[in-house]
Image: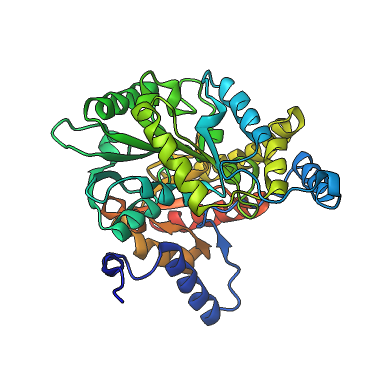
Length: 394
């Protein structure tokens, strides 16, 4: 027996596990501290009534012989496919139902999709970035190249013609920076991918936060994207499904003349038994008129939280991006502090937890992520504490 020695090349601890350990250690040493967590990007608002009603109805379906559902299609039920086709039409995108695959979340498919690609492909990943992109490729032993995202390019790197890559990861709005590509930026990447016979793995998990009509919600709004891009999205942030688990992946038939679509179908039918019927019924309800109205209330709740944090950072004179069209704010650590140094300082000074930018890659050194996925009153308290702490440095 031989183990996969690529695991030796991974960081020894997942970023958020390290944060949890440090916070637990601090809490044990300072039990009186009232800690507010603005670190992990988990939602806090409950599932909306339309979704809850659909869940209850689907549970009742499972109690009757005539409406009981056992194994479903691995690629998802037709009713959810149709709902997603309708959703994409609101963005001006036309999809066929057989191009959509229902999953238990974008994170799973972003890793699992690598099954259909050879290990010799060169992967291009922005830095800083969501750690899953890097770790899943390191596990598979692929060569990984990085493109710097920094203040000078607005944390939105564009293609370099001298760099050749086969698989390209893009996330817009970005996690962790909150920066979002405009149409010209995505068009540059689509043209690069088509010219180099590359595939873009496009993470659109936060597209629901985009309010600026000049920013695309899907990469398929860009001409030529269907011949070079696979899109991943999720109900986690859109509808609060982080604990319910449902997402989708789009593999266009135009991509390699349908070959990747067939390969992904084959992979899913072999390794995946599909998402639970009751969860898919709940997801379908998100796209009902009532569901869409109700989830907007929750999204607006988080947007207001982002505005509260942004206002505090503005008053403190701290550089940041994100916050608009994104639930994340990416700030430059004050007083020349490093990411982990600022993490410790903020925890000790303000009893607020954020995410060190360094955990997202070398280009994240000296930066810090705050999330708007919190309780409104606690977010206001956290923003006031952050502002007060930052003023002590001035």
